[in-house]
Amino acid sequence: MWALLLLLPTVLCLSPAGPPQERTPLFRLTQQGPWESGASNGTASPCEGLPLAGATTLTLVNRSLERLPGCLPRALRRLDGSHNLLGALSAPELGHLPQLEELTLRHNRIAALRWGPGWPAGLRTLDLSYNRLAALPPCGGPALPSLRALALAGNPLQALQPGAFSCFPALRLLNLSCTALGRGPQAGITDAAFAGAGGAPLAALEVLDLSGTFLPRVHSGWIRDLPKLTSLYLRKMPQLTSLEGDIFKMTPDLQQLDCQDSPALTSVHTHIFQDTPHLQVLLLQKPSASLSKISCPFRRIFLYA
Image: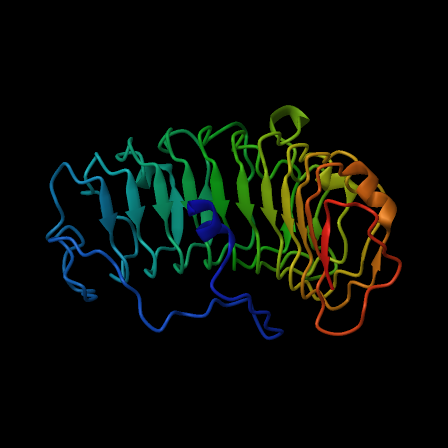
């Protein structure tokens, strides 16, 4: 279930005037501990009322924090610091949390990331959705060898450079939905963007969400480095026009392809599915015109159009 929560934002919104936004819920239910007042207090010390030791889960939502407190319990495994004012994130801010497994920092102002030694070695889930990341830092090695899920939805990312995710050799789920990928003349996903260390494929990745981006097509130059891909989400992509070529030649394990509500997608060449013997669900639902150049001879594919 945690994977689905990371993968699917509340609402996909495309705005021509600025970066995508996520609709804020009318209300939110949270479990409140004795150290949480339930109200934002920008003048109080960030350490006031925090447990000194032993706590494994902590919520610091909407506290006007500009940085993570250095007094957090070392035993923490799950930390939610969403809806604050954090502007950057690096290893020194997390080095005192050696047991951290899940870090959620949605809706902050993070514009700078620094990978490197000192990050919690056991971090498995990192959610940086709806921040201000316009680019990802280069990676010289596996900074987060245990990371399984990375969510970057809603950031103003326009391009991915080669080896952008080589820091995460165990990554299984990557959410890039509602980013600005493809917007601009030099924007997009470069060849080898999903290559791992030394140019090897990012062999563990299974789920990739590119919904709500501005990519015009899927290129074999980057999808070839995802040999274990099982689910690809291409929903609500206004500039996606066709699926063709040998784009699935290196992804034989693909089981689900979701292209619903991509209004410009009018050409799908059926021969591309000869390379996906395990494909079970193909979603090409559109709000208006029917697709051309497509037929569905495979029994295990369910087409909704």
